[in-house]
Image 1 (cartoon, rainbow over the protein chains, first blue to last red):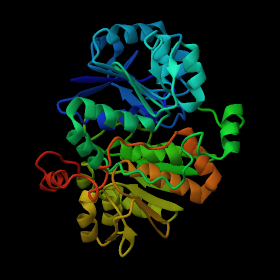
Image 2 (cartoon, each protein chain N blue to C red):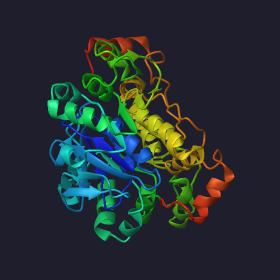
Image 3 (spheres, rainbow over the protein chains, first blue to last red):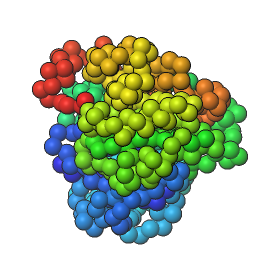
Length: 211
Length: 211
């Protein structure tokens, strides 16, 4: 089984690494990081670079496609090479997936028309503009399309999909291996839970930019 | 503020990326990935490479040191160049931290003698052998030493430390930004919670190797 994780300039690292660390532990899985060109790709902060080991063209038919998000995703929505690759690989993939604003790329490629999907909480309106039906859930499965909410949700998405593919026991083993027993020191990980003024600051973009 | 995240051959990606995605969003933080030599370093699976942008020697006095773990950590416990760097940077660091078996490297450098600390659940006995006092907690703070349990716990460690350094509100903003509202599909992320036979399989090493 081949898992292709797409990289592009200014992606968000955890969007890609959450699925890598979970899906990548499927039995007999080969994970490959792909981009238009091989070599290191920098994240949104500029401080981290992950290597793309193969070009998109070299990986024409992965079983699982994973599209992360990040501020760089907006530029990619005009990238016909990537959008074409997403459409082509989708014709043979078993699962086509995304984390965070990666779902906007799937939507821009026309793959989420009329489908239930999710994205980073700040990007749900954009997702609707591109023809999907956004939900507030953390992991959304519609047919073979599995989309996850913001950044860290790719871990939950990956474990969910490991369970679907390899069974509950294998998914539990992966969870135990990565000791995923979350104990956040705060309960502010969703707009419904965070202090209202912080949510408003994000929406008005005065202090943080993510998407 | 400078944050140095140590890389070495066969590290575990999420160990490094969890702290990167949280601590790295401290105000005015510069995060730098360091290793003995610059260039890409491969993870435990071999499928992912993160670039070390600077050598250890080029980063002599970071404010925060982050040491990830992974199967490659055992070889590093004999690496006097790295152990010396850990000892030297510790004389000026504000916080010296680890995720997963990274704490074994801090312990091998003599930094955790008699201190409360943690590690991947499979590695707690090793930690004791190296002079620390292992606890079963997910994030352990003893003075300026902050150690985290296995792999995914670096996210909780990072948010905890962001709160200590920049205040609760900033930490909540980071949590909201990375939408860290965990909803694991299983409750098997700790040995006390996972099916007993899976825990036993890990301990007898028949199916999985992590540390």
